Image (spheres, rainbow, N blue to C red):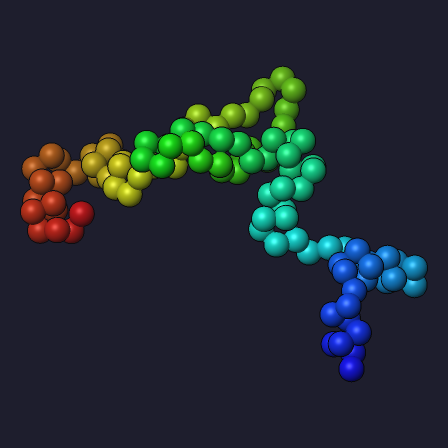
Amino acid sequence: MIQNSLEKLTSDMCINLLKAKKVPVGLINNISAALNDEQVITRQMVQEVKHKTLGVIKQLGPVAKYSETPATIYSAPPILGEHTELILQEELGYSKEEIKKLRIEKVI
């Protein structure tokens, strides 16, 4: 009985009814609605970047917005394994021979 009544109401109608009764309420967006929200668009929270294999893609932009030091997206997400060798060498100290062995053994 309650479900039948609620199914006839839009989200806005429910919010207005609850606000009229002084019930704290807010809309919970799905991902599509959240990313297309007016405030998200105005703050440029979703930005387009060029991806190596996918072309132009949308991704979340920097949250903090500072007038003196504006943040920006400087690259698209890496493709799978794109930085593996770099990380193994520069961050973990692996030699080229060790990395070659890992590739032969199909570890990477």
